View (cartoon, rainbow, N blue to C red):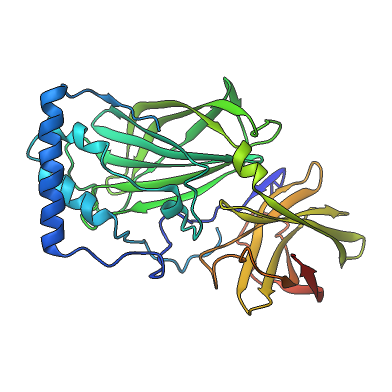
Length: 367
């Protein structure tokens, strides 16, 4: 098995649903009102400009999930169903579809102060891809985008996914871990939401960088076909604010995993985008780790291995916020941590889920 850069792809985008963070469903009267308001806005905009093809506005591990039906998509669905009879209005309607990165990732936090709103659409070969938002943080860039047919029609029962999306930073092609997920975000299957998390190394993300995202094909599993095209985006993102607002707590605790194999939990970092525990392993690269954390109020979260680099023995576990109680609260005074490990298969094959406890639980003071 190739463990040069081991990546667990967590399907965070399409599977999160939490009634605590979603508004009540829209009534038919509200949908009709939104539809009319949107159509009125479309027609007023059409008087000001002609439609164009590029629209810009600056500013695994768990298989038991469900495709989320984001309530916000109700308005989008009404919009799409209303404008499909106006072929020239579809493009004008695109800029009104808002699907936030927080919703895409199922985050309980608010990224409003840290996101770069791109909202740029590119159309090719009958499909419109809209890059919505981007957030940069240390060694990572996270984006979300939507896919639609140009005619606004349904895309079938299975959401199509990009065959491959390439990332460039300041003109340099980035090769690293990529994770994410996707799914329909409306009941009519006319809009697909995609999230992508790019792990990037050797790049200072605490400054403004120029990023290019390039997609050249979409896989349609409904017809077993590939749609070719060129959907290229260029944008800037600056992670300095999010990095500055990241809280770090030193852990510096080592455990014996097996004969000659040790792992050291180095630090916990907390910010609005993610919560991670950085670790270093020596003597082997054949283990993945999982960690449960229970704070002083009884709130429980779980961290799972997200990235491990065998070249230097470093990696991190990320809080899977769609499990248990979400995330560690900013005002938590302490957490009780318990570490678990599982050995990776010697050859390619199905991963075992038989994690076993390593050492004893220990308390980490946060305040």
